[in-house]
Length: 138
Image 1 (cartoon, helix red, strand yellow):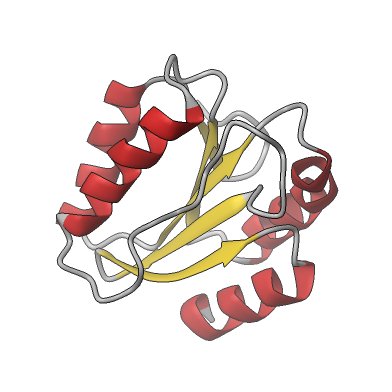
Image 2: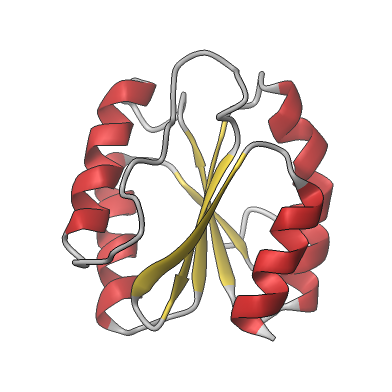
């Protein structure tokens, strides 16, 4: 069930994350993995733009992962994400730079196209978020 009226789904556990990324990769689905934290100011800033863009691109599913609610520390989730990305044999940098502290690295968004990580946006850069979605999912 969507966590909001749009096509944004909340990932609540590492197992759910693993099964979701496996499905996205195996079925070559367009998707965004949005790593966030409820206490992170930049994450709150970019959230309305993510909601707006999810409505503009209804064929792209956004999976929202609150790094504090997955039952793992930010570092442990980073390792999980890195392993999942490495499994795709993609050439894009595999480190998503999720940390336990709110910094310039939060939020982090991974963009998938044709089952592979195609791009990454780190930080609350709305213009880069919009241009990345435009170039990948138009």
